[in-house]
Length: 216
Image (cartoon, rainbow, N blue to C red):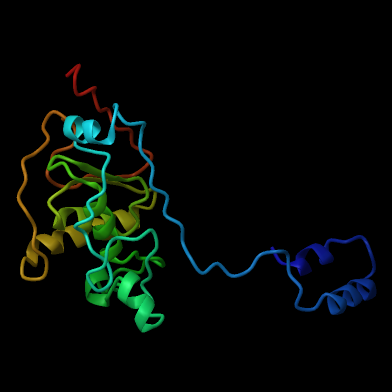
């Protein structure tokens, strides 16, 4: 909320309020424009060393064969807006095109497919890895996972976005000339109620009854 909102609620006359507004013209609460969006990456404690964890559970390490910008080593920052030649060379990823998003996709914050692909390629080693997006939006994470041959689950409270996600996945199947996908084995023992490979877009009001993979 802006400062004017709080000035308006002050228990003083309107003339005094206007004087305060004039005095503080241009001054705001201590918040400046955010020019970045943080992405947190976390994992459970490793089973002994990272190497042991990777060999035993196929998770824990990052794939540094993945490149960014002009074939550069992966970094902890990236941009989708061209800044200058030097920065673009090391950190630039492409913005989503209308063709990539779908002309019908009216989601306000469609993530670039390149970002989702970058993060999945960086961290998902196992062929049976499952990419879970609990806020799937218009389905970019699922599209990226499918392109890379990974299993995926998408969840969203907005039924409209669920339908957009499903449409994007169907179009992905129909446009093999645009996207290349890899065939992988299904993870039948992960959660029998969710067939793999493929997508299950679930409204958050639903409940997933997924039995323990060991207990059966």
